[in-house]
Length: 60
Length: 483
Image 1: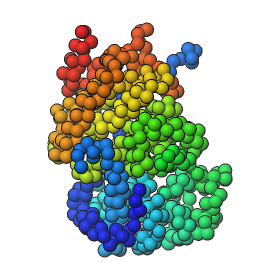
Image 2: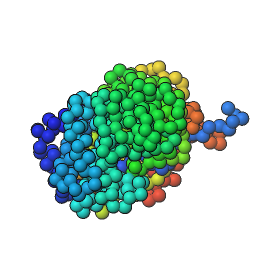
Image 3: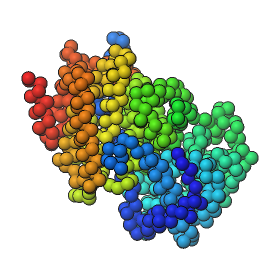
Image 4: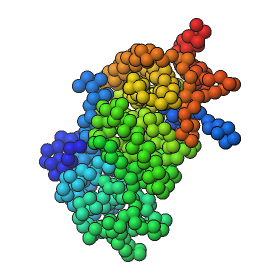
């Protein structure tokens, strides 16, 4: 992971900052964020297969 | 870069996302500096921002690559935009609901106060003193960003700053020395250390408290469990990472570049495993389980992260009448409920490297009997599910040119996986193997008969494809059964 230097960004990333500022002041959807979502789903199963029940205690 | 390289080889996406969050922090500072009196707390935020910007960049990077930093800065951008009339996103609405606030002005004021947890993390990492004009009221347990420390206790904590190696607390006044972390069992506020797992170049925290953030949209009761639960299952995590390193070194190199925090939770009725778009490099997994299944789960969940990073280069879906992100409208061969197209795209992507993991493990030839049986279930099932997923996207999605390139690349990969599956002798008559809640691999037996992969896929279609979207695939599977 490369170092993140805010001072260097302030000096050399003015295009990115301006684009972000424009998003804040105008159209926030113009900023390329990933869609807000969660991977979890109701009824999700282990690795796409069915859930297997443990046998009753007496059968273990 | 070709779509295939973008999907599987590019490990720079994690860095790009981190850099974007740094740029966003500067934009937040400039927005507030242009109107410091509009938002209460701006002056202190601007002072703390300067303190952060003047810190050693290595220390700042350690703190700002914490998944919660992206969460914080993206909310800040959206709340500031909403002060100018932009609508709130789902995560911001959920955030407001969680903290009982109903307007963006109160939300951004609350949110600016939360910046202090990053300042505290940086003070600890840098060993530098800092004080807050207005004390920070922390809800416990609180993960301190960029560190393995968790501030925990029965009630909240009021923090006035950090000095002489200790967090300075108020009401009552006391100091919590970092050097004492993990040695106090006091029920009052105290510091604990979460496990840090190291495997080769991968280093990951096991820290459920990091997920205690408003509006992330998952139940969080499990995150209050004592850290002992993480330590209890740490060996399982270590074994899973070792398995990835052995069978899928290219994913392992991605983990080294982008993985930060995992939380383990017990099995319950809420969810099994989860990755949240707002927390780069983090996911939650349910245990107990088998170490190789956990490895496959890590690969699965981490690739959600990868696809989120890829999506920040440009959207996959055109705007249409359908809500591709949240509209649960379509059959997915992996879950019982209908799913949004975006979710189906994610599933098609993340199950491909999982398939590759299992084929590599089979080819290596040392899997135990039950792991081999589970692997054969997976490589028999996955190609059929992937093809259905691709078909669903092609039938229903309005894709951007980038999205079409991605889906075409995934379709080509699926064709390769089918061939790979056949070459390993996988068939639809393979018996289903699953894992129980207690973490044991077993066949699915019904009426004294071992259910086959074909039967389970057909049963799933019968139960969950309520609109008959995959009727053609269902007929194909049923006809193949009668041959």
